[in-house]
Length: 329
Ligand code: DGY
Image (cartoon, rainbow, N blue to C red):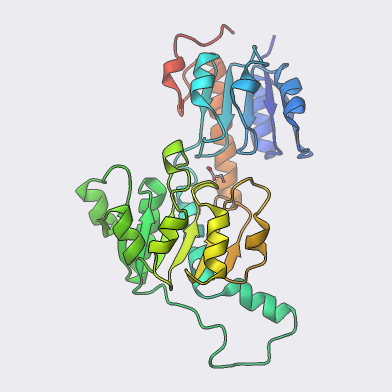
């Protein structure tokens, strides 16, 4: 009998074709929003699931789905999966590192420029019929070229952002839990600094660090107070890394100049105080959203799923401690 796999969000035909060669597949091609109970009911009938960042895999859910053997997320971030709970329940968890690095780095530069150059504000003005021709003092922004840019988080994506910044002749600083090796610093032309120095010296701060209990509110009131009044904050990482309420207050009071956000606390809801502000560019968590990259992400998740159920050894296993505890096929 074939193993059963649930795909929780709409995916590409080739991903479904590939999974269907190995498994009996049920896919949410209509993109219905599952409640926790809906998800549990479907997972109770599944050996594995290909999921997105919208599905929370935690102790409460895992204790209700005893047959589940693997959760394969089409994302590099995995803060929506409780790895310790997965290990306790003998569930392999995987992600998709590497395949989205370049697209997320591109989008980080895109949102940075859109924020510095007030693109959203200009478009809103134009669409509302308020544009009256060139006005030499209207919609003045800041340059990215020759700015000091601080990157918080210097993994694959942070380093790819730094490489792109070389083309803008920026002074690039970075901070991270572990300092990168000299070759990586040299390739990115980036200088390691403390978090405090990064906050005080940067014209633009780009957040691209993983969300963990230690990075919860990495940027809160105290950090916002340390930034330059002309500073721009870009969050490409995860909601919860920034205190969105404190950010909205700082933007409103012009304690910092502007922000660009791709991620939010409590997605898909966005703090209403942010929605009212003109000096924030808001995008709906689309940093990896190119056709090529999303195809690569879903195929990587599918390959992890096939390997998990057939060999018990998926390439992007996040909880290797689970080995020896996995459930029999
Ligand atoms: C990731 O892969 O973690 C991204 O945030 C999803 O787009």
